[in-house]
Structures are given as structure tokens and as C-alpha cells.
Length: 265
Image 1 (cartoon, rainbow, N blue to C red):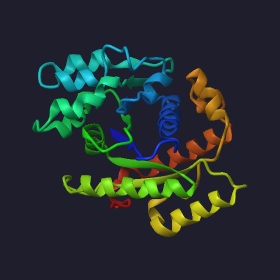
Image 2: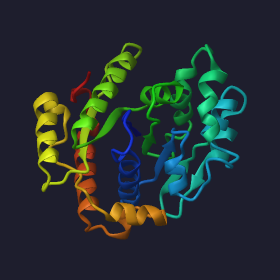
Image 3: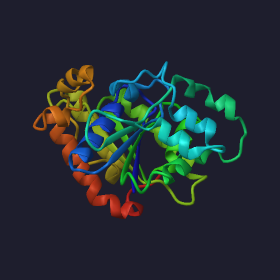
């Protein structure tokens, strides 16, 4: 089982698009894939046709029942999407209250890690969509994953958000037995805009081997298919954005067996 978490503490960088695209590509390879929506805003949940304001079984109920009936909570929350081999553990907006509810409860940062152990035989690939803020939900996601994927829009303000994310990762690593490997993914790249080209150069200059050596380009088709709740790699596998995510997945699959050699904070 390989678990990736997708996170950035700045919005609008392509986080949910990255989760949807990678997961749909894995599913089309015939590999059962699970996606987790750990963001109370529920963008990923909404993408696949569920309402995070009214949903009854979700990751929120998993947190509530983990000590009493974890298996039933997990499988009640698990939803099949309209696509073969692709499943979701959806979000509820009530997840925003978990930090206050759980307080100083011991082991609260490992709930998702323990949850996913119940699903390891069923899903060889799991991708977690993280919230944009540091709290119990992000801590759980980073504690559970094998590698952190950080989408970063190729513009100057987004580079500042990356610094915050890496600072958070550094704090999380203090509580892990070993550092968490990460990969920075340049997104929304426009080869016709100078600031985009310069931002990409700055990423490579500052973070070196921690940056994927390709880019996810601007592709308006992502916006079009998101309105329909459809993954771009399934609707148009030859779209520039779909081809880029296919290349990214190949890179991740090549390096998944040797994550400990990848860059750490």
C-alpha cells in the first residue's frame, strides 16, 4: 500500500485537481484507489457528487467512532464513485470542529493512520486531500502518508506559501521516527508568462532535487470538467494537463519503492 498526501497552505494551487487526476489515472490502470477528503471545505467530496453540509457518514464519523466501532464507521463512510476502481472517504463540514472536540486526547494524531490499516488489503493506492491549515486533520494526514506531494503554482506569492508548508512539515517531522519525503509539483505553468518562467527557475534554484523536473501546465479543460464532476484524464487523456499528470504518476510509481532516498525537510 502506498499513501500520498497532497497539501499546501495556500489555496488555488491545484491541490484537489492533483488528487482527482492521479487517482483517476490509477483507477484506469485497474488499481483500486481510495481518496480521502480531509478538508472541511469538502471540494473533493463535492467534485464527486456529495454534499459535505448534509452527508451523514464521513471522515468526521470515523473520528467520532474510532474507539467504539472503527470498522463499521469506515465502511459506512466509504463511497464508490461513478468510476471503476475509484472510491472516496468524503468530508463533512463538521470536521472543522474536531480540534476543539478532541482537545488533548491521546493518539488523536494517528486516527487516520490506524483507520487506513483496515483498508490496506483492499486499496493498494491511497491519496489524501489535506486541509490548508495546520491542525488535527493535517497532522493525521501527514502521519499516515508515505510521501507528501506539494502542488505549487508557478507565481511569486505561491512560493511564500510553500515556505509555510515546509515549515509545517519540519514541525511534523519532529514527532515522526524519520523525516517525511516530499515532492514539490510546479502547477499552473504558463510558458508565455515571464513571471511563471522565473518562478519555476526559483523553485529549482532553491529546492533542487525536491522539485519534480516537469510541470503541470495551465489547461482550461480542468475547469470545464470539474463543473461536471469528471476527471480530465478520463474525459480527454490527450489533454495537456492529463498528459502532464500521467507523467507525474509514472515518476511517483518509479520512486515509490525507494521513498526514503527522496528529499526530506
